[in-house]
Length: 122
Image 1 (cartoon, rainbow, N blue to C red):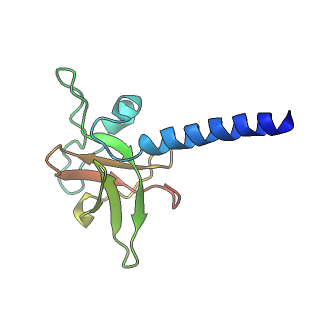
Image 2 (cartoon, one colour):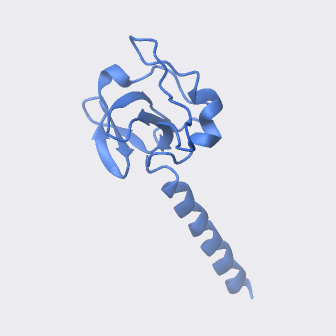
């Protein structure tokens, strides 16, 4: 009986981890609604324009959680729509997200408006 309980817990844990990772692959629209309240406050460095376009006609906005890492030369790479992309320094915000994760604001065409680097494990 203890083996069966352990197996169920392990399976549930694995499913939770898989779901969490999928929600952070930088796909357009994923996680935007949950974070929109603070996304709308983000401003593009150097311009003051909003990073977030909001939701129009039922289409999700440009900002979403993602996974990211710092390269050896100090530049960020982040997942955008499932592809690892180098983040231009002009788009990197010098603040942390409220949840400590990495977040990207980018158009469907790949134009990066803003990026927030998260903790090293994000």
